[in-house]
Length: 66
Image (cartoon, rainbow, N blue to C red):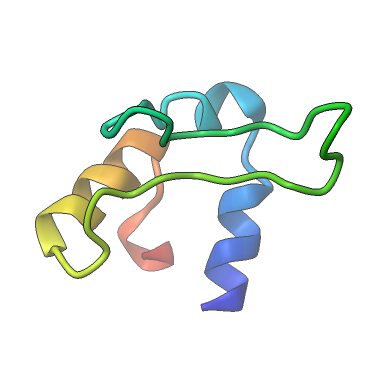
């Protein structure tokens, strides 16, 4: 799981920006001057197979890395 998380965060900014706001204030949040270490991606429901598939498809993550 840590390996997958690390790989996702190492994607380019352009790819991560495809993770759009499903819920207002969610989606990709990039590091900024106030928070150099904080970066996040959003997924609507991590318990939903369909939502996980949509998240991975949006970021171009292969089925091997899911």
